[in-house]
Image (cartoon, rainbow, N blue to C red):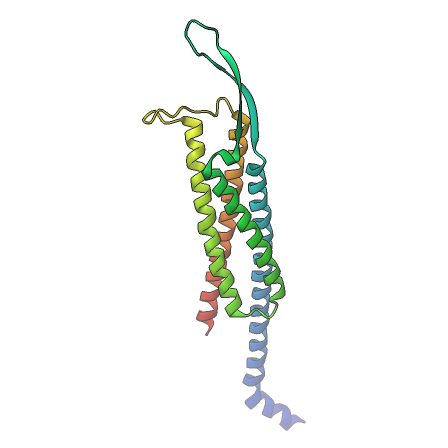
Length: 207
């Protein structure tokens, strides 16, 4: 027994230590993968909720009010009922459609990610590419809606476009809220792309 113990301590000690170190490293890698997977799932749920909220906020946006209009300087102004709806502006239509597409994709990708427990790299790369497409889609929708909203708030004296948000205050405030929510959702998709890129870089470095 003493000879066996001496043999292990002199010849096999380094091998046993290497096995333990390798096991610790594998535990750390598995823990990191679980953390990345959990973070990705949480981000997808949040992105789904925010893009849905943005689409609904603007999709139900409507305001009716009465505006006094003077036909002639000598006549008293006549009250005219006017209505602002989201589908009157093509930029707002594009915004709602873009967020609806991103919301549907977030739901589908969430189910695929939950089903992909094996962590297939090919499928993960495809999802990352589509995440990047959603970032571009949402950024374009936010930019278009923001540009139209800015004209509504400030007008444009160069082309004689009057501001309208002092008349349709509720409509403009709700549209601004939808744009802000969608922007946060787009940043979540961007964060998912960033995390996937960092994970890919880490895997390449470990090899």
